[in-house]
Amino acid sequence: MILSDEQRISYYLGYENLNFKEEPFDFSPHELFDHPFCVDARNKQCLSRAHYDPDIIKYVSLNNLEKLWFCCGDKPYTGVNYPVLVKTRDTFNKLSKGVIANLNSGRHWNLDLSQDIEWNDKKNEVFWRGADTGHDIHCNDRIGFVSKYFSEHDVAFSDYSQNYKSAPYLYKKEWLKGFCTRQDFLKRKFLPILDGNDKSSSLNWILASNSVPIMPKPRFHSWLCEDFLESGVHYIEVQPDFSDLNIVLDWCRENDEECESIAKNGAKFISENFTNQETETRIIKSLLEFIRSGLYDIKNKG
Image (tube, rainbow, N blue to C red):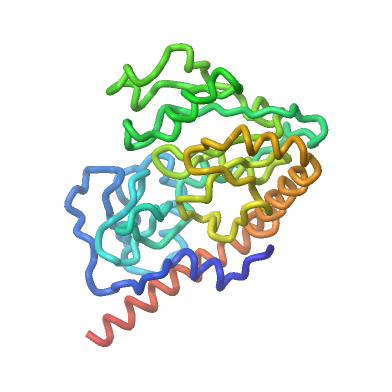
């Protein structure tokens, strides 16, 4: 499936009419994350947002506006429906809004698969590692997943860096197995995708690999255009709480060729739509031009 520029731009803009009149209120200029902030194109300076900086600089350099609004971080932007550039929109949160941009791309779009191996050389196994993230500690997909499947499959936490600090009683010491390499993942066929604070940072590269993603219907919308991913075509679907994982795995092992085909479709979705840098730049410019035109119309009508 090759997405047109129009399909992608419409997806990034969202399904609500943008309000070009009412700017967000930059009430916390020193809160680096999860708050909207404005970059003045005349001096192109703002407080550093760490790994977001290269993308902020790129968008500002491609933009013809006097100023550009961003909201960086893992929590959804829920302010006024102004064209604020965000990494994701949360479909579980009706207030989540913003124009999707390719932010934190170094983390989400590192598609180095030089150590990948062919499908038939992979182990017929499940493998997962991840941090103890997730905003709701007491209703946490990752805790439930590891708790249920730790003794059956090679699934564990790579580090206790977030939720463990405030609720250590929810975690077991044996659940912590430490970090592993991408190569460790790629030795296996079946790779679960579990969201953390927002979209899983492994989804894009797993989709691009020779392994197959096992995941619920995507919750977060991002630069990946998740709405266009089809269950049974690009990934293997499970229930949101992964309660049917073993049933799904039984099907996978009985339908190995179909699973290999799904893995290839996912890799094709990535390669056909997101690896041409000229296309990516053109779409970014088109998004920014849409915002510029909207603001220009309001300015001249007002």
